[in-house]
Length: 159
Figure 1: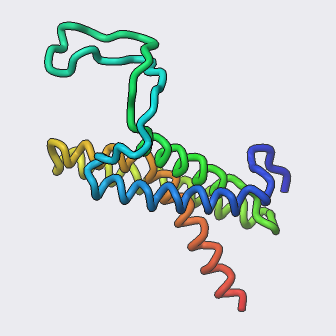
Figure 2: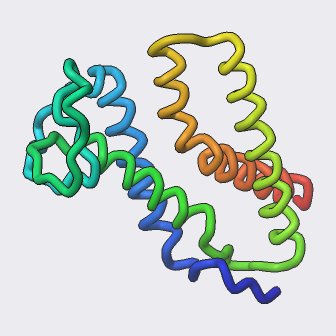
Figure 3: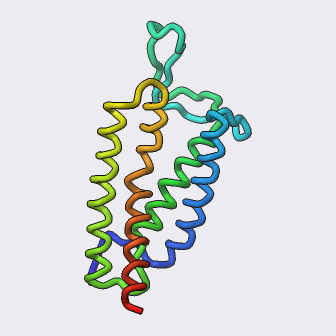
């Protein structure tokens, strides 16, 4: 089956490594309330709020600031690793794998937005913000989980 959007299979292992490192570091950051100043460096901020306590001072654009980047690195590792894992070809890529991939993607989007609707109605304040942060990753993670689950389930039925 010809699929133009999939990466070669060789990207799957580096993807799993990045995804694993990103998830572990993300959990560590979450447990420590994102207060991990180990990797503080100067970065370019596209939009920067000048003073959080006095918002009337406005925003500045393209400002160099000092910022801990551990959370940004963790986010990038999860997203890039997840994309590499989720969108790398299987060793045996056929119509059935294509169907599993498509069904898993649809299932992940429906599950993700069902959870988001429920939390929008029943969860509030900073807990809701935490859920929105997790929501950046859940469609990709749900897709990877569901796709691999269906592949394993199919293999066990074939044996």
